Length: 403
Image (cartoon, rainbow, N blue to C red; front, side):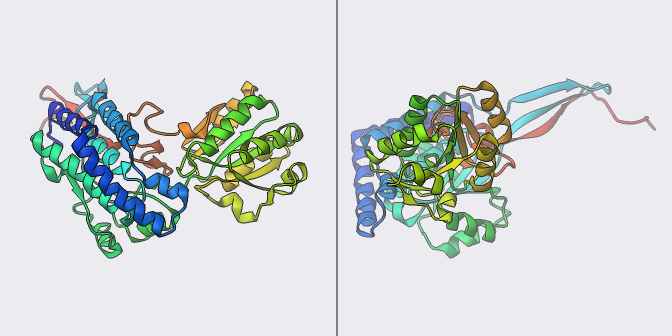
Protein backbone atom coordinates (compact mmCIF):
# COMPACT_ATOMS: atom_id res chain seq x y z
CA UNK A 1 0.00 0.00 0.00
CA UNK A 2 2.90 2.34 0.65
CA UNK A 3 3.88 1.96 -3.01
CA UNK A 4 0.33 2.19 -4.39
CA UNK A 5 -0.20 4.94 -6.95
CA UNK A 6 -2.61 7.78 -6.38
CA UNK A 7 -4.54 6.63 -9.43
CA UNK A 8 -5.05 3.11 -8.12
CA UNK A 9 -6.12 4.36 -4.69
CA UNK A 10 -8.55 6.84 -6.21
CA UNK A 11 -9.95 4.18 -8.53
CA UNK A 12 -10.72 1.94 -5.56
CA UNK A 13 -12.48 4.81 -3.79
CA UNK A 14 -14.53 5.58 -6.90
CA UNK A 15 -15.69 1.96 -7.02
CA UNK A 16 -16.66 2.04 -3.32
CA UNK A 17 -18.64 5.26 -3.73
CA UNK A 18 -20.47 3.92 -6.77
CA UNK A 19 -21.32 0.66 -5.00
CA UNK A 20 -22.86 2.51 -2.05
CA UNK A 21 -25.49 3.98 -4.37
CA UNK A 22 -26.01 0.92 -6.61
CA UNK A 23 -29.48 -0.56 -5.92
CA UNK A 24 -28.39 -4.19 -5.68
CA UNK A 25 -25.52 -3.41 -3.29
CA UNK A 26 -27.64 -1.01 -1.25
CA UNK A 27 -30.34 -3.65 -0.89
CA UNK A 28 -27.84 -6.18 0.42
CA UNK A 29 -26.32 -3.72 2.92
CA UNK A 30 -29.72 -2.63 4.22
CA UNK A 31 -30.87 -6.23 4.59
CA UNK A 32 -27.78 -6.98 6.69
CA UNK A 33 -28.34 -3.81 8.71
CA UNK A 34 -31.97 -4.73 9.35
CA UNK A 35 -30.79 -7.90 11.11
CA UNK A 36 -28.51 -5.86 13.39
CA UNK A 37 -31.19 -3.26 14.13
CA UNK A 38 -33.81 -5.89 14.96
CA UNK A 39 -31.38 -7.62 17.31
CA UNK A 40 -30.51 -4.30 18.99
CA UNK A 41 -34.17 -3.38 19.49
CA UNK A 42 -34.92 -6.83 20.92
CA UNK A 43 -31.97 -6.45 23.29
CA UNK A 44 -33.37 -3.17 24.61
CA UNK A 45 -30.76 -0.75 23.31
CA UNK A 46 -31.74 2.89 23.72
CA UNK A 47 -33.31 4.70 20.74
CA UNK A 48 -30.20 6.89 20.44
CA UNK A 49 -27.90 3.86 20.21
CA UNK A 50 -30.22 2.18 17.71
CA UNK A 51 -30.07 5.37 15.66
CA UNK A 52 -26.26 5.17 15.61
CA UNK A 53 -26.54 1.63 14.31
CA UNK A 54 -29.19 2.21 11.66
CA UNK A 55 -28.44 2.63 7.96
CA UNK A 56 -30.79 3.81 5.23
CA UNK A 57 -30.40 4.97 1.63
CA UNK A 58 -29.78 8.56 2.72
CA UNK A 59 -27.00 7.56 5.11
CA UNK A 60 -25.39 5.32 2.51
CA UNK A 61 -25.57 8.19 0.01
CA UNK A 62 -23.87 10.42 2.60
CA UNK A 63 -21.18 7.76 3.04
CA UNK A 64 -20.69 7.68 -0.74
CA UNK A 65 -20.28 11.48 -0.78
CA UNK A 66 -17.70 11.27 2.01
CA UNK A 67 -15.74 8.67 0.04
CA UNK A 68 -15.82 10.88 -3.04
CA UNK A 69 -14.57 13.80 -0.97
CA UNK A 70 -11.66 11.67 0.25
CA UNK A 71 -10.92 10.64 -3.32
CA UNK A 72 -10.83 14.31 -4.37
CA UNK A 73 -8.37 15.29 -1.63
CA UNK A 74 -4.67 15.57 -2.50
CA UNK A 75 -2.70 12.39 -1.84
CA UNK A 76 -0.54 13.19 1.21
CA UNK A 77 1.93 10.34 0.65
CA UNK A 78 5.30 11.26 -0.82
CA UNK A 79 5.02 15.01 -0.51
CA UNK A 80 8.18 16.77 0.71
CA UNK A 81 7.79 19.82 2.95
CA UNK A 82 10.12 22.30 4.62
CA UNK A 83 13.07 21.69 2.29
CA UNK A 84 16.00 23.72 3.64
CA UNK A 85 19.60 24.06 2.38
CA UNK A 86 22.23 23.39 5.03
CA UNK A 87 25.75 24.93 5.12
CA UNK A 88 27.20 21.53 4.20
CA UNK A 89 25.42 21.67 0.83
CA UNK A 90 22.75 19.07 1.57
CA UNK A 91 19.04 19.84 1.47
CA UNK A 92 16.91 18.54 4.35
CA UNK A 93 13.15 18.05 4.14
CA UNK A 94 10.26 16.03 5.58
CA UNK A 95 8.38 13.48 3.49
CA UNK A 96 4.88 12.26 4.39
CA UNK A 97 4.64 8.49 4.68
CA UNK A 98 1.90 6.07 5.83
CA UNK A 99 1.69 4.96 9.44
CA UNK A 100 1.57 1.30 8.40
CA UNK A 101 -1.04 -1.14 9.73
CA UNK A 102 -3.81 0.52 11.73
CA UNK A 103 -6.16 -1.44 14.00
CA UNK A 104 -9.56 0.25 14.41
CA UNK A 105 -11.69 -0.98 17.33
CA UNK A 106 -15.20 0.45 17.32
CA UNK A 107 -18.78 0.00 18.45
CA UNK A 108 -22.27 0.52 17.05
CA UNK A 109 -21.61 2.78 14.05
CA UNK A 110 -21.20 0.80 10.81
CA UNK A 111 -20.31 3.94 8.86
CA UNK A 112 -16.91 3.75 10.59
CA UNK A 113 -16.17 0.67 8.49
CA UNK A 114 -16.26 2.69 5.27
CA UNK A 115 -14.81 5.93 6.66
CA UNK A 116 -11.84 4.12 8.23
CA UNK A 117 -11.17 1.94 5.22
CA UNK A 118 -11.37 4.85 2.77
CA UNK A 119 -9.12 7.13 4.79
CA UNK A 120 -6.53 4.45 5.48
CA UNK A 121 -6.55 3.42 1.83
CA UNK A 122 -5.97 6.98 0.57
CA UNK A 123 -3.20 7.52 3.13
CA UNK A 124 -1.45 4.32 2.01
CA UNK A 125 -2.12 2.33 5.17
CA UNK A 126 -3.49 -1.15 5.68
CA UNK A 127 -6.35 -1.39 8.17
CA UNK A 128 -7.70 -4.08 10.44
CA UNK A 129 -11.35 -3.42 11.29
CA UNK A 130 -12.76 -4.85 14.48
CA UNK A 131 -16.33 -3.64 14.95
CA UNK A 132 -18.77 -4.49 17.72
CA UNK A 133 -21.02 -7.53 17.68
CA UNK A 134 -24.12 -5.30 17.52
CA UNK A 135 -23.15 -4.23 13.95
CA UNK A 136 -21.61 -7.51 12.78
CA UNK A 137 -23.79 -8.09 9.70
CA UNK A 138 -23.65 -4.46 8.59
CA UNK A 139 -19.87 -4.24 9.00
CA UNK A 140 -19.32 -7.50 7.17
CA UNK A 141 -21.36 -6.27 4.19
CA UNK A 142 -19.61 -2.89 4.05
CA UNK A 143 -16.13 -4.37 4.42
CA UNK A 144 -16.98 -6.73 1.56
CA UNK A 145 -17.75 -3.74 -0.66
CA UNK A 146 -14.36 -2.18 0.08
CA UNK A 147 -12.42 -5.41 -0.39
CA UNK A 148 -14.09 -6.01 -3.75
CA UNK A 149 -13.15 -2.48 -4.83
CA UNK A 150 -9.52 -3.06 -3.85
CA UNK A 151 -9.39 -6.23 -5.91
CA UNK A 152 -11.01 -4.59 -8.93
CA UNK A 153 -8.56 -1.68 -8.82
CA UNK A 154 -5.52 -3.97 -8.65
CA UNK A 155 -4.68 -3.35 -5.00
CA UNK A 156 -4.33 -6.11 -2.39
CA UNK A 157 -7.68 -7.15 -0.89
CA UNK A 158 -6.05 -7.66 2.46
CA UNK A 159 -5.21 -3.98 2.74
CA UNK A 160 -8.61 -4.02 4.47
CA UNK A 161 -9.19 -6.91 6.87
CA UNK A 162 -12.46 -7.30 8.74
CA UNK A 163 -12.26 -9.27 11.98
CA UNK A 164 -15.38 -11.42 11.84
CA UNK A 165 -15.07 -12.56 15.45
CA UNK A 166 -16.14 -10.37 18.37
CA UNK A 167 -14.26 -12.43 20.97
CA UNK A 168 -12.43 -10.07 23.34
CA UNK A 169 -9.49 -12.42 23.76
CA UNK A 170 -8.84 -12.27 20.02
CA UNK A 171 -8.82 -8.47 20.22
CA UNK A 172 -6.46 -8.54 23.19
CA UNK A 173 -4.12 -10.75 21.18
CA UNK A 174 -4.12 -8.30 18.26
CA UNK A 175 -3.31 -5.43 20.60
CA UNK A 176 -0.07 -7.15 21.56
CA UNK A 177 1.15 -7.76 17.98
CA UNK A 178 3.76 -5.00 17.93
CA UNK A 179 5.58 -6.54 14.97
CA UNK A 180 2.51 -6.42 12.71
CA UNK A 181 0.34 -3.53 13.97
CA UNK A 182 1.66 0.02 14.15
CA UNK A 183 -1.24 1.81 15.83
CA UNK A 184 -4.58 1.09 17.52
CA UNK A 185 -7.48 3.53 17.53
CA UNK A 186 -10.43 2.63 19.79
CA UNK A 187 -13.79 4.32 19.18
CA UNK A 188 -16.57 3.63 21.64
CA UNK A 189 -17.56 3.77 25.27
CA UNK A 190 -15.31 4.24 28.26
CA UNK A 191 -15.18 0.51 29.01
CA UNK A 192 -13.91 -0.29 25.51
CA UNK A 193 -11.25 2.41 25.53
CA UNK A 194 -10.07 1.48 29.02
CA UNK A 195 -9.83 -2.19 27.99
CA UNK A 196 -7.79 -1.31 24.89
CA UNK A 197 -5.44 0.91 26.90
CA UNK A 198 -4.97 -1.80 29.52
CA UNK A 199 -4.27 -4.59 27.05
CA UNK A 200 -2.34 -2.80 24.30
CA UNK A 201 1.36 -3.02 23.69
CA UNK A 202 0.98 -1.16 20.39
CA UNK A 203 0.59 2.65 20.52
CA UNK A 204 -3.00 3.82 21.12
CA UNK A 205 -4.75 7.01 20.07
CA UNK A 206 -7.90 7.43 22.12
CA UNK A 207 -11.24 8.56 20.77
CA UNK A 208 -12.54 9.22 24.25
CA UNK A 209 -16.06 10.07 25.38
CA UNK A 210 -17.59 13.37 24.35
CA UNK A 211 -18.68 15.25 27.46
CA UNK A 212 -19.28 18.43 25.49
CA UNK A 213 -20.40 21.78 26.96
CA UNK A 214 -22.00 24.94 25.65
CA UNK A 215 -21.26 27.99 27.80
CA UNK A 216 -23.74 30.85 27.49
CA UNK A 217 -21.70 33.93 28.36
CA UNK A 218 -23.12 37.09 29.91
CA UNK A 219 -22.76 38.84 26.54
CA UNK A 220 -24.53 36.12 24.54
CA UNK A 221 -27.31 36.78 22.08
CA UNK A 222 -30.11 34.69 23.56
CA UNK A 223 -31.68 33.72 20.23
CA UNK A 224 -28.29 32.45 19.03
CA UNK A 225 -27.69 30.60 22.28
CA UNK A 226 -31.05 28.83 22.12
CA UNK A 227 -30.56 27.84 18.47
CA UNK A 228 -27.03 26.53 19.06
CA UNK A 229 -27.94 24.51 22.15
CA UNK A 230 -31.07 22.95 20.65
CA UNK A 231 -29.07 21.83 17.62
CA UNK A 232 -26.11 20.61 19.71
CA UNK A 233 -28.38 18.46 21.90
CA UNK A 234 -31.28 17.39 19.70
CA UNK A 235 -30.02 16.94 16.12
CA UNK A 236 -28.33 13.60 16.93
CA UNK A 237 -28.11 13.00 20.68
CA UNK A 238 -26.38 9.62 20.34
CA UNK A 239 -23.13 10.90 18.80
CA UNK A 240 -19.93 12.02 20.51
CA UNK A 241 -20.14 15.68 19.47
CA UNK A 242 -23.62 16.19 20.92
CA UNK A 243 -23.72 18.61 23.84
CA UNK A 244 -24.24 16.96 27.22
CA UNK A 245 -24.17 20.02 29.48
CA UNK A 246 -25.10 23.68 29.21
CA UNK A 247 -23.41 26.24 31.47
CA UNK A 248 -25.18 29.57 31.92
CA UNK A 249 -23.67 32.77 33.30
CA UNK A 250 -25.56 33.94 36.38
CA UNK A 251 -25.98 37.42 34.89
CA UNK A 252 -28.33 36.17 32.17
CA UNK A 253 -29.62 32.93 33.68
CA UNK A 254 -32.96 34.45 34.86
CA UNK A 255 -33.76 35.69 31.35
CA UNK A 256 -32.39 32.71 29.47
CA UNK A 257 -32.89 29.48 31.39
CA UNK A 258 -36.74 29.45 31.39
CA UNK A 259 -36.91 29.91 27.62
CA UNK A 260 -34.16 27.34 27.02
CA UNK A 261 -35.91 24.83 29.27
CA UNK A 262 -39.16 25.34 27.39
CA UNK A 263 -37.46 24.89 24.00
CA UNK A 264 -35.64 21.72 25.03
CA UNK A 265 -38.56 20.21 26.93
CA UNK A 266 -40.75 20.70 23.86
CA UNK A 267 -38.31 18.48 21.99
CA UNK A 268 -38.33 15.74 24.62
CA UNK A 269 -35.12 16.65 26.45
CA UNK A 270 -34.92 15.82 30.16
CA UNK A 271 -33.03 18.54 32.03
CA UNK A 272 -31.04 17.86 35.20
CA UNK A 273 -30.05 21.08 36.90
CA UNK A 274 -27.92 22.17 39.83
CA UNK A 275 -29.54 24.05 42.72
CA UNK A 276 -29.23 27.46 41.08
CA UNK A 277 -30.69 26.25 37.80
CA UNK A 278 -33.62 24.60 39.56
CA UNK A 279 -34.25 27.81 41.45
CA UNK A 280 -35.02 29.42 38.08
CA UNK A 281 -36.75 26.41 36.50
CA UNK A 282 -38.31 24.31 39.30
CA UNK A 283 -39.55 21.68 36.85
CA UNK A 284 -35.98 20.50 36.22
CA UNK A 285 -34.86 17.26 37.79
CA UNK A 286 -32.20 17.60 40.46
CA UNK A 287 -28.79 16.78 39.02
CA UNK A 288 -26.64 14.22 40.80
CA UNK A 289 -22.91 15.03 40.96
CA UNK A 290 -22.21 12.26 38.43
CA UNK A 291 -24.52 13.88 35.85
CA UNK A 292 -21.88 16.52 35.16
CA UNK A 293 -19.36 13.80 34.26
CA UNK A 294 -21.66 11.69 32.09
CA UNK A 295 -21.89 11.23 28.34
CA UNK A 296 -25.63 10.61 28.15
CA UNK A 297 -25.86 9.88 24.40
CA UNK A 298 -29.60 10.47 24.75
CA UNK A 299 -32.12 13.26 25.23
CA UNK A 300 -30.81 14.12 28.69
CA UNK A 301 -28.86 17.29 29.45
CA UNK A 302 -27.20 18.63 32.57
CA UNK A 303 -27.52 22.33 33.42
CA UNK A 304 -25.29 24.47 35.66
CA UNK A 305 -25.31 28.16 36.56
CA UNK A 306 -21.90 29.74 37.18
CA UNK A 307 -20.83 33.09 38.61
CA UNK A 308 -18.74 34.34 35.70
CA UNK A 309 -16.39 33.52 32.82
CA UNK A 310 -13.57 32.19 35.03
CA UNK A 311 -15.98 29.89 36.84
CA UNK A 312 -17.22 28.56 33.50
CA UNK A 313 -13.70 27.74 32.31
CA UNK A 314 -12.94 26.04 35.62
CA UNK A 315 -16.15 24.01 35.29
CA UNK A 316 -15.17 22.87 31.77
CA UNK A 317 -11.66 21.96 32.93
CA UNK A 318 -13.08 19.87 35.77
CA UNK A 319 -15.85 18.07 33.89
CA UNK A 320 -14.86 18.09 30.21
CA UNK A 321 -13.29 15.22 28.29
CA UNK A 322 -11.07 17.30 25.94
CA UNK A 323 -13.47 16.57 23.09
CA UNK A 324 -15.56 19.62 22.12
CA UNK A 325 -16.41 22.86 23.94
CA UNK A 326 -18.38 25.91 22.79
CA UNK A 327 -19.07 29.45 23.96
CA UNK A 328 -21.92 31.69 22.85
CA UNK A 329 -21.00 35.37 23.20
CA UNK A 330 -20.85 38.70 21.38
CA UNK A 331 -17.80 39.71 23.40
CA UNK A 332 -14.78 39.21 21.14
CA UNK A 333 -12.28 39.33 24.00
CA UNK A 334 -14.17 36.66 25.95
CA UNK A 335 -14.40 34.48 22.85
CA UNK A 336 -10.66 34.68 22.14
CA UNK A 337 -9.80 34.01 25.78
CA UNK A 338 -12.09 30.96 25.78
CA UNK A 339 -10.34 29.64 22.65
CA UNK A 340 -6.94 29.98 24.31
CA UNK A 341 -7.78 28.71 27.78
CA UNK A 342 -10.07 25.76 27.12
CA UNK A 343 -8.26 22.47 26.52
CA UNK A 344 -10.27 20.49 23.97
CA UNK A 345 -9.67 19.03 20.53
CA UNK A 346 -12.11 21.57 19.06
CA UNK A 347 -13.30 24.83 20.61
CA UNK A 348 -16.12 26.77 18.94
CA UNK A 349 -17.51 30.29 19.19
CA UNK A 350 -21.22 30.85 18.43
CA UNK A 351 -21.59 27.48 16.71
CA UNK A 352 -22.95 24.04 17.57
CA UNK A 353 -20.66 21.37 18.99
CA UNK A 354 -21.95 19.16 16.17
CA UNK A 355 -19.43 20.82 13.83
CA UNK A 356 -16.53 18.88 15.37
CA UNK A 357 -16.64 16.35 12.58
CA UNK A 358 -14.14 15.54 9.87
CA UNK A 359 -16.52 16.23 7.01
CA UNK A 360 -17.71 19.54 8.48
CA UNK A 361 -14.12 20.68 9.12
CA UNK A 362 -13.06 19.96 5.55
CA UNK A 363 -11.23 16.67 6.07
CA UNK A 364 -13.62 14.68 3.87
CA UNK A 365 -14.20 12.17 6.64
CA UNK A 366 -12.54 11.14 9.85
CA UNK A 367 -11.24 8.03 11.52
CA UNK A 368 -12.25 9.36 14.91
CA UNK A 369 -11.82 12.41 17.10
CA UNK A 370 -8.60 12.04 19.02
CA UNK A 371 -8.58 13.28 22.60
CA UNK A 372 -4.94 12.18 22.86
CA UNK A 373 -2.51 14.97 22.04
CA UNK A 374 0.16 12.67 20.58
CA UNK A 375 0.25 12.47 17.66
CA UNK A 376 -3.13 13.87 16.67
CA UNK A 377 -5.68 16.07 18.47
CA UNK A 378 -9.18 16.33 17.06
CA UNK A 379 -10.67 14.69 13.95
CA UNK A 380 -8.21 12.31 12.30
CA UNK A 381 -8.20 12.81 8.55
CA UNK A 382 -5.63 12.00 5.90
CA UNK A 383 -2.81 14.11 7.31
CA UNK A 384 -3.24 12.51 10.75
CA UNK A 385 -3.00 9.04 9.18
CA UNK A 386 0.51 9.77 7.98
CA UNK A 387 3.76 10.73 9.65
CA UNK A 388 6.84 12.51 8.35
CA UNK A 389 10.31 11.14 7.88
CA UNK A 390 13.46 13.15 7.19
CA UNK A 391 14.87 13.05 3.66
CA UNK A 392 18.25 14.42 2.60
CA UNK A 393 19.15 15.46 -0.96
CA UNK A 394 22.85 15.72 -1.63
CA UNK A 395 25.43 16.09 -4.37
CA UNK A 396 28.14 13.81 -3.01
CA UNK A 397 28.64 15.72 0.24
CA UNK A 398 30.48 13.97 3.08
CA UNK A 399 30.66 14.90 6.72
CA UNK A 400 33.79 15.95 8.56
CA UNK A 401 37.38 16.36 7.41
CA UNK A 402 38.45 13.88 4.71
CA UNK A 403 41.08 11.37 5.87
